[in-house]
Length: 371
Length: 176
Image (cartoon, rainbow over all chains, first blue to last red; front, side, top):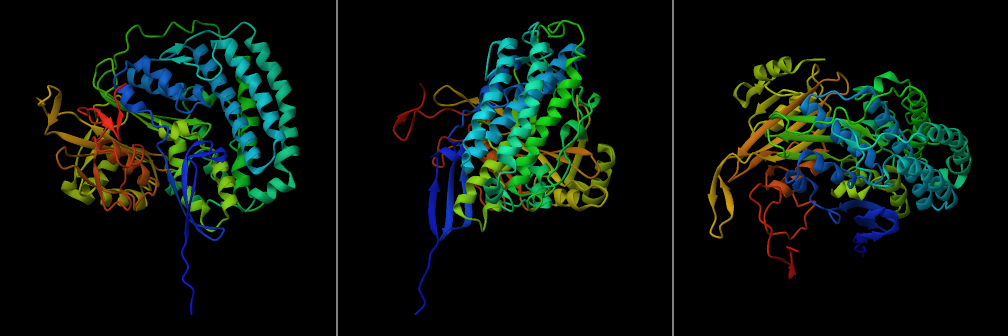
């Protein structure tokens, strides 16, 4: 007599330390193996898009901070670029340089959290402390600039809220000098650690065609081997003036597009961000960061879709203006939201413990998934 | 790399009346209007055509055009009768580096648009979001459920311009 077997449904989350926020995964299991994963999201939904319709254009900026709270600078950056495009205004050179420097510092800070917590998920506690120690230095730089450590409201339409501190250039150079050797340290500690490689190499392989079809962007797409970076692809702001490389996954430890590749792209990107900051920091021209801020922001009727390379991927703002002082519609194309969708595809056939490794390698921020 | 005008001409030649027109009076990219019942065929063509190769859907967003007639409801609040809901598609070709925006409009009373989930998998969640927020039904979508709001939210679609918050949700008072 044949035994009847059924798959088992297991809920992971919403309160689970490895889901990096309130995410519920409905796992369908056959023994230890994953048959299907259904993510349930929305636990952190705060109606950003509805709020934005009731605000004037500059009032929306603090709300953008609260979406991807690990990369607030870059959320501001994308939004102000979109509104500036709608208004058709140019910003002073000084503002452009400071924006790029802040954006790249933010990218390093965000990647440090991604790398640190990824190690933590896999079971390596020490790198997490090192990463947060270094991130602290970047947050200090942001604090002397605008007073805030996490939610900055720093970039304004046409300018910046504050000029940089007189010590900023010196402190940033000190930071670069201190930080560069720690990347090697991090590699020795985590990237080439045998246990870490065993847990991540050949796990959750994302083929390039699948990645493109699912709209995956950022380090997760580059981990699959395509050098697609919006800073190179369609340079916004002044990114076309800097010399930097776009690291891609090469399957050094396993197969192209596995968890280790996605992880390692982030490590390499920190080095490239340092290069951009180094090129920009000495060239910051003089000027007034408030001179181009319009007194009244009332864009003409029309639509704009502006995308930027956020630390997690393509962050797009779609804004419709009806000619009034409030946006008619703001839609955010959040990279975490789009990247999370591919999770089910990646997990099939893996073990339950691998779900943690795969989820961590996509690096989502739930504040942005749910908006 | 093709300009939006060239793309529009190619589409017009292949789809006649289903491709309605092109609007260029924009501060940024022009918009091509497409019939909601043909959007999936147009998208499949755009993805597979050798000269176009729109392999990535950057963004898909629902919009409440709020162009209907505004009437007073029984409780004094304003509701919108008639008019349209729209869906915007932002496409990009990684190979040729060109992009295009499509727009399709459907009636507010019975909003139905063909799903493009079979063309780009990424549309799955985007369409669920548009359904959740605007109540736009995507025909042939494999899994059209609410995504950001609770599954048992019965008070309508939050991003419609005439949306009203309910008094209670599961016995909890909503306005605070």
